[in-house]
Image (cartoon, rainbow, N blue to C red):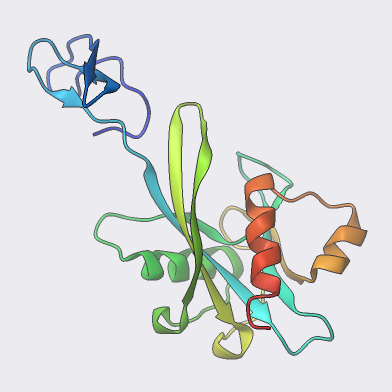
Length: 178
């Protein structure tokens, strides 16, 4: 199994061939005779919503690393081996914003597959949490140049840019607790 399309067998290094298997085009090693599965990378994110403001606001981060440097997203990232999705979301939130929540207060906002980038497919589980259940003040951490709460109206008036795939989740999170 690989996260990007493979040209060579990860076991023996032989150049892969293309076959049809299970009615789909797959890559296969002619030496090992194994199909090299190309699977999506699991990710998790969490939207912390501050409902005590005049207009609900969602904690977001400005990307400091590719892809999307300078664009705003919900805090999140890749799950690690053996890590539960909620634990990954909580870890990424703390790494990127300094804000912490317990995994058991997270509610599922949704799940989505992102369009592939350089052959890499990502599937993300999106969570939401109430700011009342969080501790810490937002500050930019790893992968972020800024961390702050945005209401949809304030974001729209700012001239800032959201990563397109994340903007729908941002807006859904802002109204989640209504």
